[in-house]
Image 1 (cartoon, helix red, strand yellow):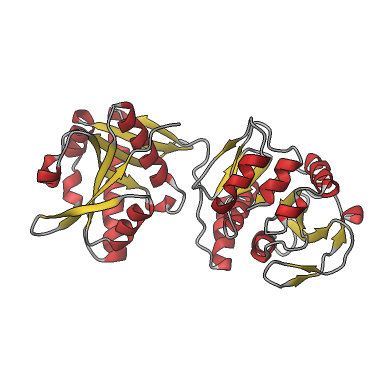
Image 2 (cartoon, helix red, strand yellow):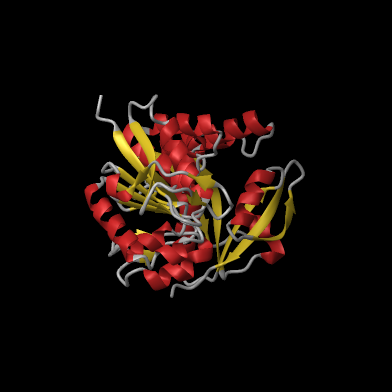
Length: 366
């Protein structure tokens, strides 16, 4: 059994309470009764009560001068970060402590403190979407700002978006240190829907003949899972005989998502798709078809990454619209596409089933 890892959670006036307590509880619950993590709060000057932005009072366990050197440093955000980012004594302590720690994790506008501490050079970083303009000003020119993600892992430095995203980032780090099962169990104990980001090892590739069995298994598992959970057949299992899937891969532009040698998703891109779109069909679009992600990887952002890839691919082919259809009887999936910025264009009825038709304008790269 490895040594207990010390987790220091920084607190300061007008910090966001959930930025503090979310990661704190995640590591505490994952601690295996204190055998793996020792979690504590630390303030810069003294152990006097800290008042959060919501009015909750926190009594720090340590002042910075007496704080045990942590293995993991948590830097939360909150309205107070806008002031504390100019507190050189604090940002110097963050820099010094981070250099000794194995990992530093910021939550929300805690990224502003990391920026001022000089810790974001050359990194991919994120923060609360409402504070992205502040991070643009504070971060070095070498940093790349990433929007619409829950967290970004650079190895030793992890930054996360707002509030509850800090729990997701903490669970991600717990998984890195003690395995995915520990993180999943922790999320369950917290009754938290862990929203994971696909790791840097996610690869999206053109499908080949060797992928046919994996794609077929993905489709069949998805069809059976949707039926067992939601009570309807989004797809029919008999539609995925091996010969059919083989022809699908052979005759179309099919792409697969692979994560750590596991095939976790796929889609195809079509340029002619009049069967469903009818009079609304036009050639200034790419049509996504058979988008599927392993239900075992639900919430990891793989579907979003596939959509982004498809959009980039369609843009590279000179088109300005991305289109797809979704079975009308699946409200959760319809809501998912709306949340990704797709706009409902109409409905297609085939008698035994119906589909909603969605379109998203492709944003040109800056």
